[in-house]
Length: 408
Image (cartoon, rainbow, N blue to C red; front, side):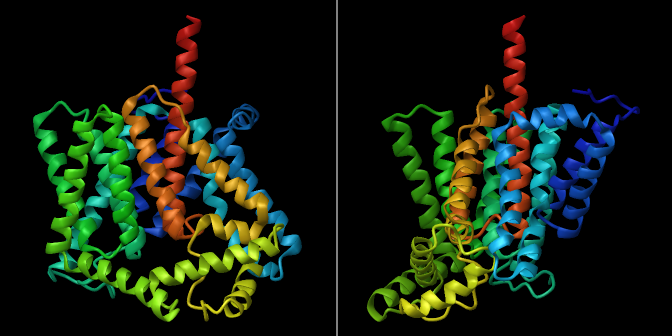
């Protein structure tokens, strides 16, 4: 791996600098995200040594799974009822190429800069969000009641949850009191921002990920478990009593479930997801080989009416990544995404903060994937690509370093 040399940057350094730019861009600009992603791919090709890179990639299960997902999706066009739609659908998968690219070209010296770039960009997003919330300024058509400036509130809540996990892992190893105070303030603002927004998915994923990260750092004892429940319970009570948005979303969710149970009403946010889940399962059972890209929407409308759930035309997917691939690509698609999550979950690290960050990210993204088609939404894909590339590369580098030290 080429080292960073001041005033004499190598082509590999530019790949890593563009990766930092990618990390900075994803919370605030789709255009910049695409630009830096394309620059990473182009620079990687210019860097050369392709045969050695392919050899490295061929030994990495996670990279191969993402490449297989791309190739199998293309292959599935053979039985797609709408090939043009299918091609447009698959075009978004180009970002997945960054995962194997960074595996071969990431320099671990840039790790803190990648994370800091993401945190800086999220800070900009937060400031914008708070300004909208307190009506200090306006941004496009974003309302103070849902101050998610650069993406929808669900995705923004997921980004905030990931921001909090990064800050927690930094706080737990930070030695400077000054930085501890600054990180603590950032943690507090991010936590408040998470609960004044309407993204229940991010709030739930934060609770799950924070619990897991805490237990990684501290012993699994009655004392710490009770302390964890007290902290999380306090956060929820405070959020419910002081955040009108959070309280409103909780009550809306409760009413959705009540109307579904009493009136067979599947028009609410939560009830519609339950209806889509039951519809998708029925389609998958009848089509274990998949409906083909595009067929999943046609079958959805037919089956939802047949099952008495009404119309789901307002939804562009099944709001569940596992279900979406099961219906669209059949058993092979479902197995592929399950294997991707399993491989991500079992990434090995010798550095505890990387392990905590990895588990936190996987739990956040898994929770998001259970409520949305995260492998196709631009902001969700970008978050997946950034942290999968980073964590997979770090795991690979630590594994390589460990074996080299053993040989010596």
